[in-house]
Image (cartoon, rainbow, N blue to C red):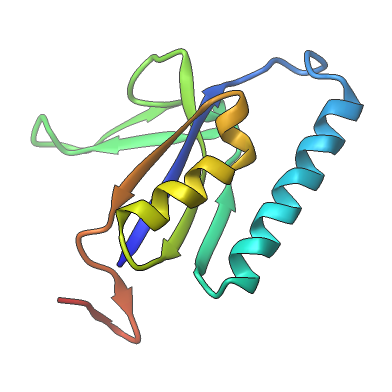
Length: 123
């Protein structure tokens, strides 16, 4: 079963986090991604640019509306996504617990409803 591990955390300002802390986090995420890959469960992983780099699109009012930045003004922002394919929720939770982001943010574990694979949506 496919699960998304959605990483949410506070977005630090430039220079707020010491370089050695950033380097340690990068090493921890490298090891985590490698462990997921070696276990054969990693399907994709992306670290996102800060929410200030986002553009939000909606057609809710009947016409295209484009807004710079995130749609919701929240303290925590979506920072990255790991898509994994594991046996069950317990296995997904075990991987989420090992995620370095869980030490300073939250990891939302959400099963996917369907996926676009090999040119078609899965059932």
